Amino acid sequence: MLSKKAKYGIRALLHLAERRGRGPILIKEIAVEERIPQKFLEAILVELKTAGVVRSRAGRKGGYELLRHPKDVNLGHVVRLIDGPLALISCVSQTAYSPCEDCGDEQACLIRMVMQEVRDGTARILEQATLEGMLASKERLRDIYSGLDFQI
Image (cartoon, rainbow, N blue to C red; front, side, top):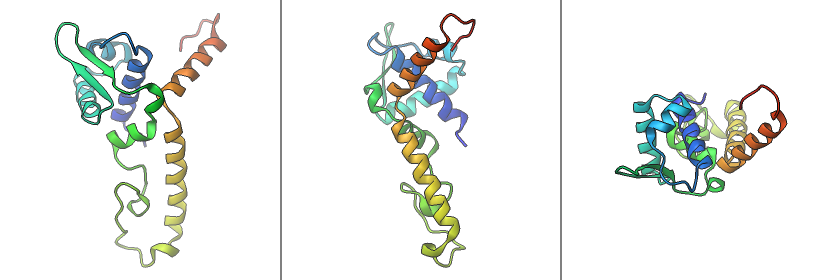
């Protein structure tokens, strides 16, 4: 399951991607507009900064901004940064592999075979989903629902 921390991180990144090129965005603005507790958001953005996804500027005109182009930030990378491996069991993880203690034959394990497919499918979908693509989807929805009393 996607953690609240990862979900908040993605929402913050989308906020920054949508405002890319306008200079740094105050953390308070992101927190208010995205309905994320500010202290929690600060911790998330520090992790994303350490990973080189965002940068911060101090001072009166400071704040956070996306360091990479939105097409270069995929959800697989973000989820792994915040939540860790995508695999449901360690023996199929590409980033945190360890053998199962109770498995006699990893190659013949039916559970492992299914979990490998789940991990591969999840990784493929998340790695294809970029901030740019998500924002384009938002715009398409906005166009579809324009004129209706409905907000996206």
